[in-house]
Amino acid sequence: MNNVIQAMLDRRSCRQYKQDPVPAEVLDEIIEAGLYAASGNGRQGAMILAVTDRKLRDRLSAMNAAVMNREGTDPFYGAPAVLVVLGNREVPTYLYDGSLVMGNLMLAASILGIGSCWIHRAKQEFESEEGKQILKDLGIEGDWEGIGHCILGYPADGIELKAAERKEGRVVKAE
Image 1 (cartoon, rainbow, N blue to C red):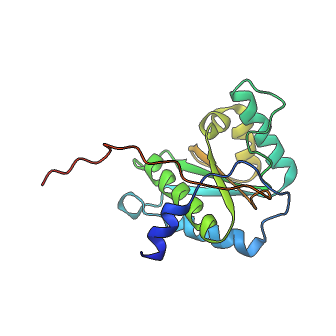
Image 2: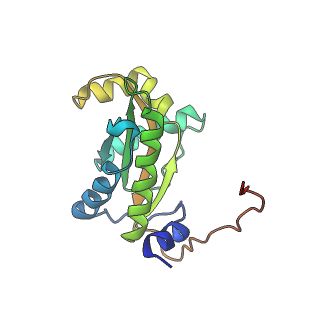
């Protein structure tokens, strides 16, 4: 089987992480893969906010937990790095573009031995005044919507990432 297709079949979400940081060069490789995701008309309507600063990472986690009314929890499962994908609302395909970026990030991470998981609620976080201020403080201007958080880290010891059985009846062939 083709190595890329095998990687797609093997990738799973990770929800337990070691605290070891992801090396910058590995993170950069994952980010580059995300930037090469397909986009509508080649407009590249998504950007990546790479968060390795523990204080900002914890702030985003707390904001995410508050959206779920689960204050005091860590929806990022202890992952030391978070890649926030933002979509430019001025680009008609921003939601799809950002989703493709998320897929590329998770697949690249898996190939490089890094665990990942898509965490939702970025939309609500960055629609809030606090979220808008974070973007402003980072020099990010424009009308951006949070698409998702790609949490990254080395899977905790003993974690087995195994695919669930695939549901039947999800393909209809019109031959």
